[in-house]
Length: 190
Image (cartoon, rainbow, N blue to C red; front, side):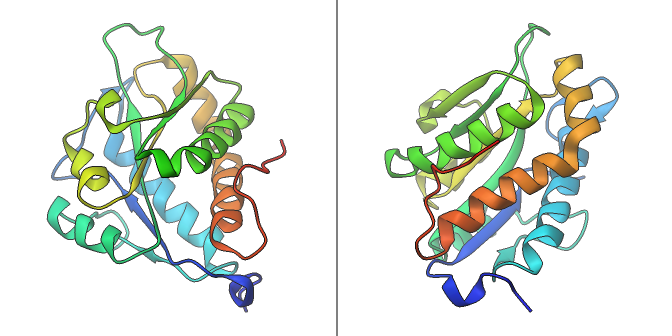
């Protein structure tokens, strides 16, 4: 039985921004695809008993961008997960990219992840701040992209690997609050 489904008033869609056909950034022996596919699947497991939601692809797969945009449009809230990357290995932190109406949720997600991992909170930003080819997920699909951490930062990556289930729970709790009646997405408590 789903814990909050009776209170749910918005539809939710979660997606991995990369897959084996488009592995994304690489850092310290890990691909962005490996991380975000696992994260999406762990998050689906976490959400399954709490709310009703849809996700892209089977385990280990994501949808092509055109299909992901269509799925995002069909839901009240659509969130796609990525890892950030930069040439400076000291770049750190979590950020979200979205339209302005999703900034409160983006900030709540950033705070939850930053608190859990002990990394910088880079905050909620507009889509022009990002470097991903899947920004159409925002522009055309109305979704929100979460850059979980910098895969090119050895410390960010190590903190994520050691605490990924805690990050899943923190993100899951924020998303449940965002889609359920009477819950405020800005009310994350560490």
